[in-house]
Length: 89
Image 1 (tube, rainbow, N blue to C red):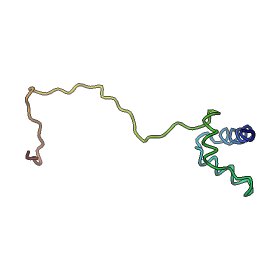
Image 2 (cartoon, rainbow, N blue to C red; image 1 turned 90 degrees about the horizontal axis):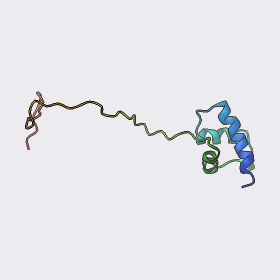
Image 3 (tube, rainbow, N blue to C red; image 1 turned 90 degrees about the vertical axis):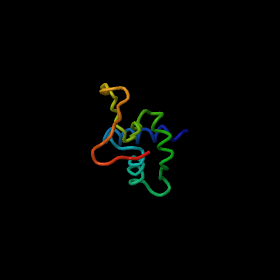
Image 4 (cartoon, rainbow, N blue to C red; image 1 turned 45 degrees about the vertical axis):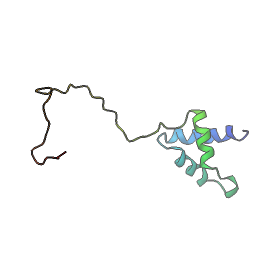
């Protein structure tokens, strides 16, 4: 689109200033200084930012901890239980 190049320049200036901001905060910062007819939709900012390589990586909240140890039992048919209670089958 014709206005995307100008929008990317404005977004790049904000990302250079604060690289930890996502598309929602960037949209808010863009709209804070504009009038009602110059407002930018967050969906448009989200569409433009990945094309310019400015979008943050997704945060899943999951920390990858690979299992690197080995589980060892005393015998192959050993029953595992706890001291506090037993779950009857």
